[in-house]
Amino acid sequence: MTITQLTAFLAAMEHGSFTAAARSLDTTQASVSELVARLERELDVVLFARGSRRLVPTEAAIELRPHATQAVSAVQNGVDTIRALTSLDRGTCTFGVLRNAAYYALADLAETFHHRHPDVRLRLVGINSAHVARSIAAGELEAGLLVLPVDEEGLEVRPLFRDEVLYASTTRDEKSGPPTIDEISEAKLVLYDAFAGWDDPTRRQLLERARLRGLTIEPALEVEHVETALDLVAAGTADTIVSRSIAESDGFPTGIRTFPLAEPMHDTIALVQREGMLLSSATRRLVELAERMLRERLPEHEGRTPAV
Image (cartoon, rainbow, N blue to C red; front, side, top):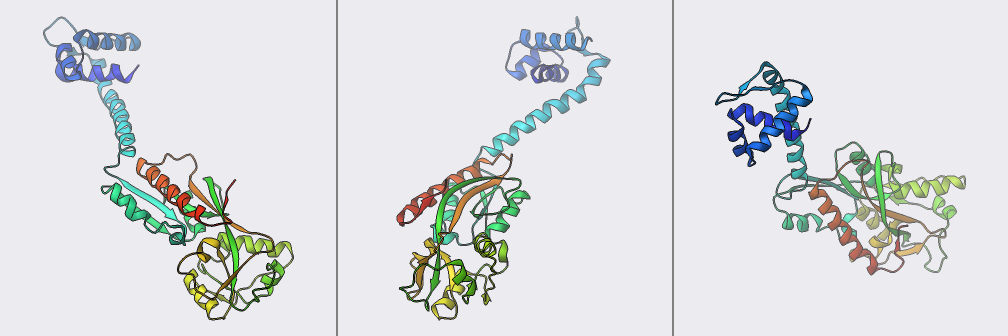
């Protein structure tokens, strides 16, 4: 049994003749007649009484009709859904970005996408990467650009680049060598992304290194935004850690010195989507745009290492 046979059967039921059914389906009378005959042979029943000027449906045909209608409708609904996924003249695109997206030249991502696809509704969520990952796994967001490590269960992760993490201070001697994890654990620190806390990917790496040495890290201050942390560093209140992209941005406060860590550490930037899910066409376009903008930005700086 095929959808084509059921479609021919339903057309014959509706129009009362193979000729009229063929006209509605833009095919030949012989083709419709043969499709219905094949269906009858497969079901081993007679669906129409022939011989009169109009087809007369049998009891079998009347019983089959609602099931055939449901089957054909289900297929058509599936086709319509896929066409909607591949169309850029409707729908909603939901995408998550890392909290500090502006430092990766992604601040104009929404504007660029909207200019190219004005009829697609865009929901761009900028929160800590740990929360973006959870939202994607829960199906609240289709995909996202975030920093690793995150809990990857239920996710497909494609690493793109690594961005070096630096130590930032105004009080540390500029001639000092790279800071060790022992020094960092003893330092007076201000850390940002206070709401995410130690779920934050960069913090997770730092804490894991401290634990491997039997140390702890307890920040003296916790704030939500990196800009606030940098203001405190600039005032000499405490030290912090930042990515190289932030340290080399135009808005980075003058007077703050940065130091590579004794044991180099990197934020791995990755594109993430829910495992086994088909992205809508709009979200695929947004992913491509975000990746291209990121690739154009990161090579500008030395010390940038593509993710393996």
